[in-house]
Length: 235
Image 1 (cartoon, one colour):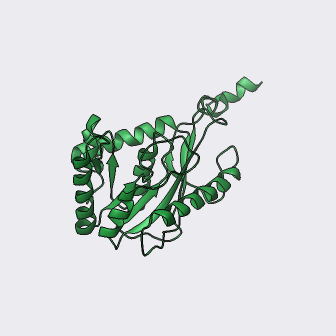
Image 2: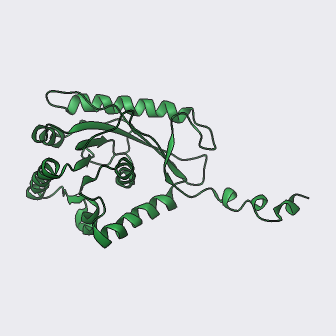
Image 3: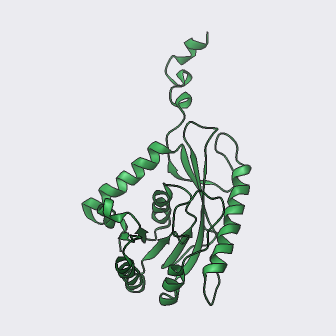
């Protein structure tokens, strides 16, 4: 399975990358401590409109082509070319079909899954109970590794918001994974918050790597001291 399928997939992928580059100063991440093998179920908190775009960057960086259930898939079905599948709130049969397709692709093609298991976008900061879809997929793809992923946004010290992503420790569970995964996700978010608190204004911080470049502040982009002959402005 390829993350970007054909010309349309490359076009949609470029759209996602362009959107992130334009809207954020940067996206920083803390990669997994150990390599991850497909298939994985990436369970992320869902507190920001751009969460899906950030997860797209993450699975691309990990080299783990993934599926993603999209509630408003009907508004932009081209997302199918980068792994999107429909998951409308008002159509139980469509959701069931997507779950069946997901299980089949995870078992037959080692596809991974990006899952916002809280079920809806919300402001946070708490984590909602995780839905039964996580348990269903984990039961039918027993070889899948459940991986918590924490996402935070910070606005205020730069012109554009910063985004931070952290891949947590895989969840060990022999039964229903929902409660252990929620606990692991909360722990990963707390750890990410500690890393963010230690980060300085320039973006340097313990353990962070650049997941996606963004757009610097206007004072950084237009700093005349960087231009040839710019020193004359300081005389």
